[in-house]
Amino acid sequence: MRRQLISIGITARLLDLAWPHVARIPIGRLPGDFSFGSAHFRVRIALATTLLVSLILSVMLWVVRR
View 1 (cartoon, rainbow, N blue to C red):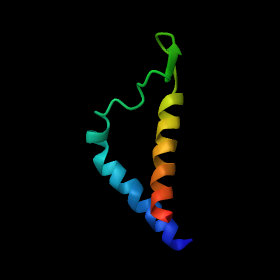
View 2: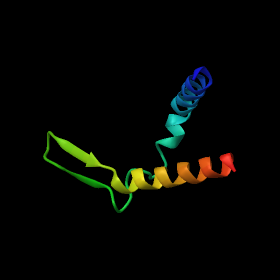
View 3: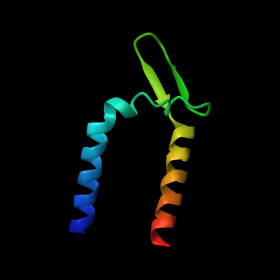
View 4: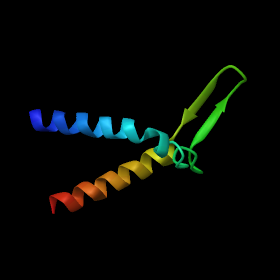
């Protein structure tokens, strides 16, 4: 359990440091992502992005465990 928490913390920190570069990637604006609202209120539902990230992580974990 301790090793998993440390790994999650290191991963979160690396993503935090890489965020200025990661923000330029057009993820979150895929054709299956919905965005609606008014001038003062906006709701974004990243359905396609969530599915894509889940698929990539599943394949990566499958390869690592194999």
